[in-house]
Length: 247
Image (cartoon, rainbow, N blue to C red):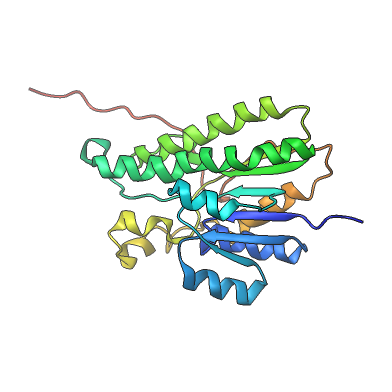
């Protein structure tokens, strides 16, 4: 009898996380949707039949309680935030701590907690949602780039350790996606947020969810190790060449 796989999706209350929950439920997976927003998770559970799990990923004790007795066949590390968009010299220590703690530390801690059971079973799939910015610099989001760059290095190095265990690892690195992750960095001003999207054809959350779904549906012998998903009209590259300072 085939076991119905259980997927744990973090940052599941909105955006890429919620879109991923919808797709994995459509594929017949049991899905545990983890986030801090009880109301949003309740609505998603009613819509999809997922299991809502209210938890603050940065609280180690709460995370231990949430994972107690939970079998995880698929882990989608998606939760993240951008606290501000300004030069690094103008960022605060709070900005540093919040982004490092959620974007990077929480990913490492959660992965470490569920990985041993996957290795013991000889199967499982880790999905890391990083960002195009992890490998391609963009100004004023230095902290976010540092955390996603750390996730990228972690994912690609961990994949080497997992070779031969039967556990697959996929890193999905999207370009600009039309989600509320940018809202806090714009001071909560939706008019400013719309300026990121109105004149640009950004990715939609379901585009990223589709890439995650496709990686999971490959045969066990095949692994999509790294997927850089960019809007068709977004290209990266170039260099900064500042003018000579006078005086």
